[in-house]
Image (cartoon, rainbow, N blue to C red; front, side):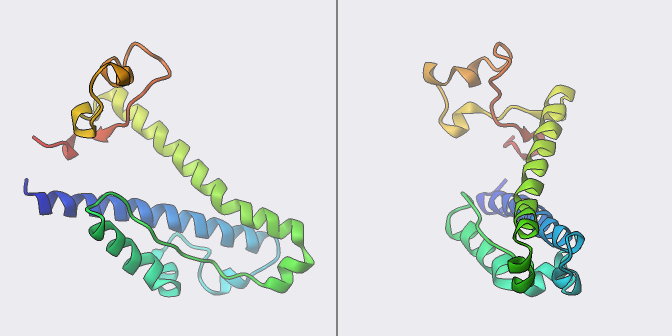
Length: 168
């Protein structure tokens, strides 16, 4: 597979994860605000897993900057942002509720990470995923024994990738 095609495939995967995690984060803020008495984000369409309202609100943070940072950095990382509107007067009147609303986004990310980790572990156990080649990540030699003996340590697990992404 050509280097550009590989970069493009990785970009699609990175962008998909970025969109899902960012929308979960912002929708959690918006949902918490709605349940706690601030319908501002609801009226803006932010209490939704549909990416379009989030993209319309922050097009540079949801499309421009993520794609630009990914391709300018040779696919090493991606950065972007989104936001959910809220009523600042509501937040001043109900600071504890506003704190819960602020915590909802990071909590959604934590849940997403835990579910993703569980899915990866299930994929490894079932054989749908396989451990990546340690040499691809520069992890060879005795200093990185967690990669050379992944099944001997119950707490050490190297990163996993779906086997379809590994070079042939």
